[in-house]
Amino acid sequence: MKALLLKVDPQIRKELLARFPAQEGAIEDYIALMDSIPIPAVGERFHDHHILPQKSFPQFADARRHPWNIRALSPQHHRVAHLSWKRVEPVAIHRIKMLIYVDVATREGLDRLSTKTGARLTELVRRAVKAYVKEANLDEKG
Image (cartoon, rainbow, N blue to C red; front, side, top):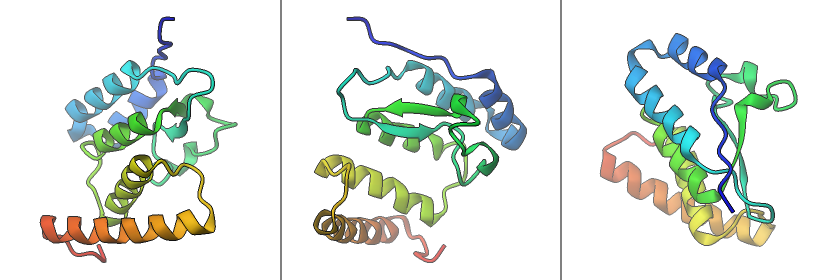
């Protein structure tokens, strides 16, 4: 069966270019990536991804009002989308922590958290963030 691809709504490109005009190349790469990622097949695990991130574009966070801003992605594609996004918007430490969280959760196969898996994931993320911050010479409070 052929993979189903959806094109990014033109509104997204318009919003991104208005907010980050100096990042046009990174925006085009991000949109091309989103256009190329297939929709997960029925029964596959998926994450809902806000193409315009909720923290940067809270006015488009509501999926019922703005369904064009939501894309179902496999956990692996979700990680790739966030890594691509960090080229568009400068990355603060809280965003790095979120990327690491998604990466660790994906590698560990933890898409639904219980108290037990949540505690394990929190510890894995804490270690990964500490290592990344040290390697990148960042201030962990940033």
